[in-house]
Image (tube, rainbow, N blue to C red; front, top):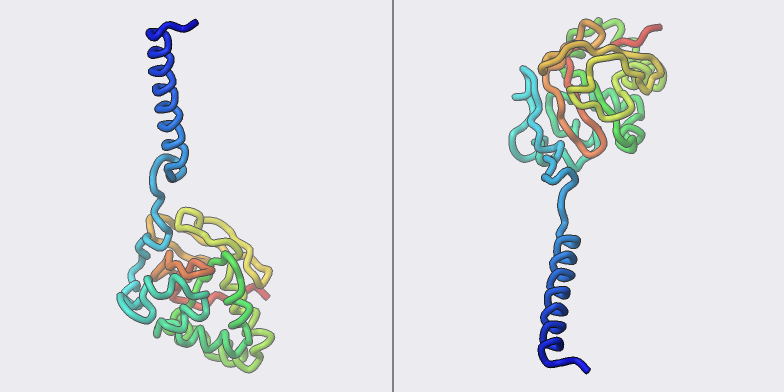
Length: 202
């Protein structure tokens, strides 16, 4: 038969045990970020480049607005990409590029198309489903590349490869085109605006 002293001690031990279980459960149900901290969203990263002023800072086309839109839809809100968006429409690539998941786009600005050999551009525009589509697809790489992953050779949707060189927010593509504003995030892509139109090898 237990004495009152033993019963009291057992009760105390029971309370302590319950408290420890409750504390353990409380810790296990508290959501924590992997690695013990909160990782910043990629959309919180500021783009880099000498021509990022072409990206609106508020309203339509701003980083906050385009992060939820697929590539072509987002590009359509940036006046500096108007020629590119028109060309994509002519090549009937709008839906397919908007449906792509996890791509990197080296997006030529209006100035890039202006500086392009106009005879080559005219020929491409007169063959939208062929040559134009080939040129545009050459600007798209599978996988969303961060600035740290840019340097190197990458396979494009056209099937050829392009080579990016540089670092510290200064990059060239195929040795001629410069990234003028990069690391812009939209719903399905990472964009790097470039100052020349890339032409795939024949």
